[in-house]
Every structure is written in C-alpha cells, then in structure tokens.
Amino acid sequence: MASRKIAVIIGSLRKDSFNRKVARTLMLLAPPTLDMEIVEIGQLPLYNQDDDAAPPPVYTEFRDKLKEFDGVLFCTPEYNRSVPAALKNAIDVGSRPYGQSAWGSKPCAVVSVTPGALGAFGANHHLRQSLVFLNMPAMQQPEAYLANIGSHYDGDTLTNDSTKAFLKKFVDAFAVWVERHAD
Image 1 (cartoon, rainbow, N blue to C red):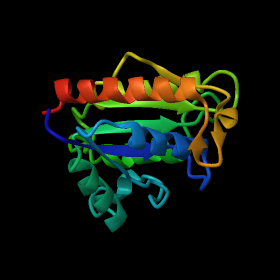
Image 2: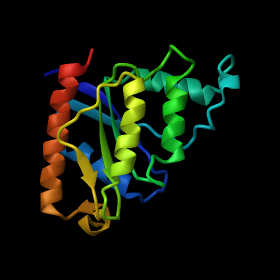
Image 3: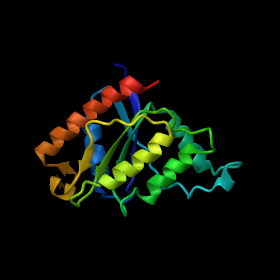
Image 4: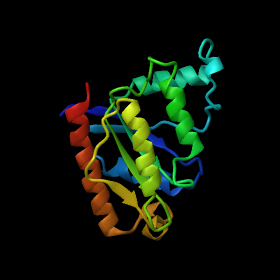
C-alpha cells in the first residue's frame, strides 16, 4: 500500500485534552502507510457566509491545507450531546463556499473520547450526520467510543493495555479503509 496523508482534526481546544492524547497515541500506533498530521482548528474565526466572496486568509489556508490530505481522522469530545463548536466551525469553514468543499470524498473515521461513562456516543453520531452530507465515507467498524479515558493515561502515556490494543486495531482498520476509499 502507498503512504496516505491523513489530517487529524481534534475537536477539543484544551491544551491537555484527552482527545489530543488519544490522537497522538493513534499517530504513534499507525502503520507506516499512514502519514498523520494534526491540523489545528482553534485559529479559525466563526464561519460567516458574508466572507465567501473575500474569505479571511486563515480560511483559505485551512481549506488549501485540507486539500493536501487523502483522508481525515476526527477525535472529538462531547459537549451537550454534540460536537464542540470549534469542530463544527472547522467543518463549516472547510465545506464552503458551497460546491467547493475541501472535505469531499475523503475517507474518514471518528473517535469520540470522554472522561465520562458513555464514550461520547452522541458526539460521534452527530458528527457522522455532517460527514454524510460532506460525502466523506466514514469507517463503520470498529466503532471508537472511549469512556473513562482519564483513568487510562498517566500524563501523556497510555497505560491501559486493552485500550492500546483496541486503538492499534482501530488505526490498522482505518489504514485499510483509507486505502480502499482514497482517490
């Protein structure tokens, strides 16, 4: 398999977020066929359709950056049974202007992460609704809902062996998914 460039989008802006830790762990566990890079979203001002005619440079830079990738891995927390505003904003910025989406047809996967008990199930499935509209084939199996994640890390180090084994299985399946669906 050829090496595929994967954008890693982290829904949490918090410096020490568990989503960032999980994303970094997945990047370390990824097979060499995936060249993964975190694409930051915190610098994006709120999307405003009035800006489509003359977008802020940061919008153009973000969209152009996304176009360089073969696939996308989303790591999201759950805020009020949905995705964080920063993640939704990044999706909106990358999808506009209408008909010029930088997301289109890129294979993707979703990992939802929470220190709570439900594994951010609501955010995972809410994000998938947007991915359908964006024409992004989302990996269905294995699903990744990581609950009680705070007890799985010591600092930045994943200490839970079963979680590590699951994440390895997940990222390996994602590599196959990307290869099957990338243009």
